[in-house]
Image (cartoon, rainbow, N blue to C red):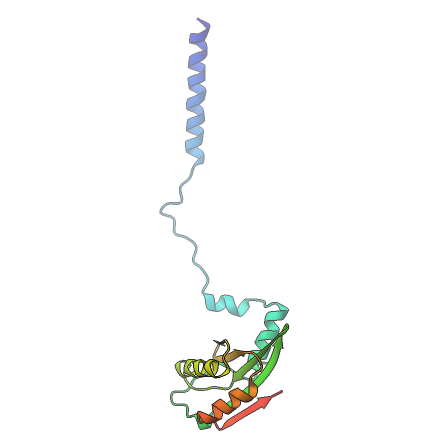
Length: 154
């Protein structure tokens, strides 16, 4: 007879726990998610590390050159190209900036320079970076391609 009395109490407790669990669970279905901020504003407000700031200064010549500048028809004679050999850690790097031609043409120039020097390289924000110290070889090659205003910066 004691078992019969305990069973109803147990089942009432179980029902009460289930009801409480149903009340606490809330669904986010149908609720619109928060809008993400645009990536452009994110990059402008981003604080760079000291190393990243130094690299950015190297690329833009302390902010004097905009590597993303493109003109419709840019003749090689009109472009003032600067070549600079810099160190990043223990590595040498040749930075070529001042191009105003479209990005596709810059990629072709980069491809040719990488073949000439036999090394790697990349284009970041319109500025060509070639691994190794190849200032003279790059200058000679650019002069052959018709770029007249080329100078090596120390």
